[in-house]
Image (cartoon, rainbow, N blue to C red; front, side, top):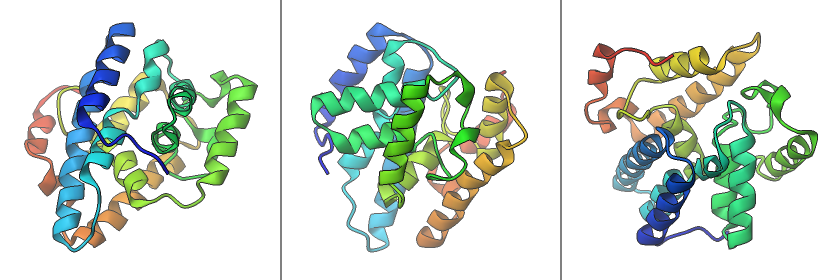
Length: 213
């Protein structure tokens, strides 16, 4: 599956997207990319053969669908998917969707403000997730890092999830969504044989700053 491997090209796309819709999502994306890079590099030290540039770029561009504007729902995932499909990068297109669904194709309806998503988009997102029943390690790392980074830097999973919940709301099924992140975190930490947080410089500083809401 084709991904963007050139970092300069990925940066150009991000700069263009940011110009269309400036916001904290840009710095968040940069930090997600840094976290992804750190984890992939550590996995390679443990014997894996992962393409760090592939992962970094996919992480950097995971929220590019926000170029169309702000939304509390996963509409940006759909917009990002369509954008990259047109550019001819189906790998990056898939990451735009998978990062919003840590439980893979399970409990799709509990995604953030699913009720706000137009029906044709829902059908397409379900189709995409159905084709990606098993997330590869890149999808898993990026999905987790999306929940470990904000616009200020790295943070704990608990702090990030609470912040998102306060800003976008929760429902009776939110805990299922959150468990998806912990499942991925536990799996990756087993592969790394260490805490994810050891790979996120300055993460402890986040506990001294206010929670965005």
